[in-house]
Image (cartoon, rainbow over all chains, first blue to last red):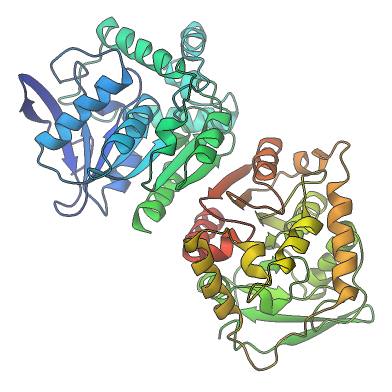
Length: 274
Length: 274
């Protein structure tokens, strides 16, 4: 079973329906993936997800209002984290690891800080801390203005030949699923999510309090030239946390984890298994 | 064969005698280790060296004037790098990877920049760039004043219980070899080496030129709370290099690689094999 072929399942919690897919072994502590701005289950890199699922259960899902899930997309990171928690508890899971990319990495920080019993370890890729530096709207506007074959090429990868080549390979991998793909969202998703990200980064006062309260092991992964959330965010997060490891990749942008999927998965396994 | 049991071999180059030991497979690209301030072959962590040597040839050696090698310890990083190059070429090696710790990481930068054909990949642990921030003399003086069972406990590890526990385990591992140990050096080694380190970090003007000229893949590994060379050095090196990966470990000092030998070796293999 792979990300491209796994059936979409559904879970009802409090009058809303969460869409999700399960991959990998049926026993063991699951790794739950938290998705980026406007992304659905089908926005993940199958190379990354399938390799992670070779040795551990991996769960991808759509948060409220996104993709094949019902409900309304909230406009705060905190409410999105509460919705993700409701999904985890609704599945009957007592303890999970989290991999959050971008907006998902912000949810991972809130969940780890608030739920030390539920959340064992977190991987934060391409994210910013509360009060961090973000250039979301400018970077998205600039990316759409480039009229690229896929907006993720300028959004997630650097202009270098190597990064763009890796980007095109990623875009092709992410398009492999043809049956039962998640519907893409419109302004009902992007507007509240953008408000949530911008609001999170606008909380400049005592922004490190959340990070300082996280005692679980954390792995922070970031690209050298992330234009949306500059890499100094990742360094500052590392310095504010007491049990974090930091990994920065060369010649890479916001989508560093999709540029180097083998390396990223090896780093995730080393982190989660030790 | 292990670091604790391997016979010391000797190589004569230009009227000086280099002491070295070879571990691991006899074929494949060797990984040459470049040692820290006042360290000998027996200052390496056997857990780290032996695990690295499970899948690749590993060579440890004493540079001129150090341990069981003859000659006079030079007082510049550049001359030490030239001596290391003479040793590599004297062995008849056409291409090697380097792992340099602390002072050794400075040699690795010079060698990679000057010898792109000879040096394939470099791992720089606990080092500083040319013009970097160093607190060598203050940190060494403070460490000796603590009257610890082994001066490397305050020098290489943080005051936390977990770090000190890992430090005592490292000190015990490094003491395992009893027969044919390298002699420790005195002021003939420490004085020129200290001068070399301080001189390297005093070169503030255009210090990044060496880093910018390195095109080979580089892995930079550093402790979160290195008091000798603060971790911002590692971040700045990463930002100045075009093909570097940065990994920072939690709750760790100058000897981060010896605090987490399994994790460090896994990261080295991931880096060297991809």
